[in-house]
Image: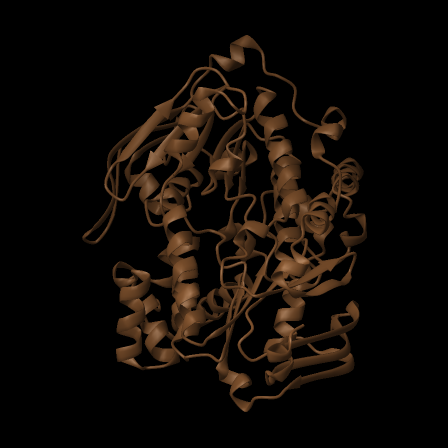
Length: 517
């Protein structure tokens, strides 16, 4: 470290700190210092403790040993901005409680809008106007929080944190859920903040997201801080090779042992389409999401749905799952039956598996992880029926496969974000559904777990028994079994198809990747 760096004032100092979440100790004996003018990234795998470390600096996670010092009074309290998935969960849970209170008190009121939340937290209209323009938020301000897509909500949270002109801004996985254009815009915005004196603490598991301007990196491996220092000293080829190869083996080695469904017979594959949308129109007041949308998903087809934030991907899934009530005012067919014409919702759910950020938000209570998986057999949020011995054995088989047996009895809300996502994917697959809907399934996952999920999806999609509808903002995650693409835009849509699954370097795969941009 050079003399100029030694002369910088300390902002945050950790001396031999050990963190605690519940009864679990994390990052024992951690010593670390953030000085004025330094912008840090914390790199680590799912469950490594990187988010807990960031929250300890914020003041939300206790340390049981050592000292954690905030030297600058402006770096404490409201002068530390914080953006994370957990914060989104907390805000939506608070809004749910307020909505229940309004209902039982007879006060109709209205759902909190994005603009109202921003003004309520700070009230500085001039600063808000500048951020609205910078982040392109104007179309979102009148929308209720629950109508926002995952990526749109992320933009609002970033604006909310910036309203307070923080001395230190903590961004925990900020690029997840954002389309390519929004990721590029956010990277430029964060770079501009750093250039104007806001210090950044970026938490991520993707090395490519350590944007220019990040001067220092803290690397977590094997439950401890492996190295902390200047970016050029930490992100060396040798250390990054070790980091990327850290974790569980690639899933394809285990695919033959998985309880994947067998291929369906020729009679079954020529049966009614899995999904059929005819002349679908969806609007919220003057906001038109879809107009005259026609789309068919046949058996044997695996679809990727791509498009920018706010283009209607979440609305489309709601039309299929029935979570969007406008599905019943349109011609929406599932497994050959029209929505709203006598079909049992439980029969539909039995044949359908769903993984989404919205589903993850619904598991807010301390339900054991094994019970979350078992609830997939009954399509419930939580377990209200006794599972059979066979069902428990299958859930444990999946936990063992994921190398997460030690998490079986851990409360779901105490798992890391990535660990929660893996549990929900297994929850969807235990019943071997005919159609599996995956909304950003790799969001929040480190490299080894992304490989695991992508390989699992490839094994499911190439088996011919379960059809896939897969939403992603990352073109590199378009696995070979994807043979059709629906590209949504904020005005209109485009359907791109191919008949055979290409190899990873084929021209067909390249054309699909271009479509996903």
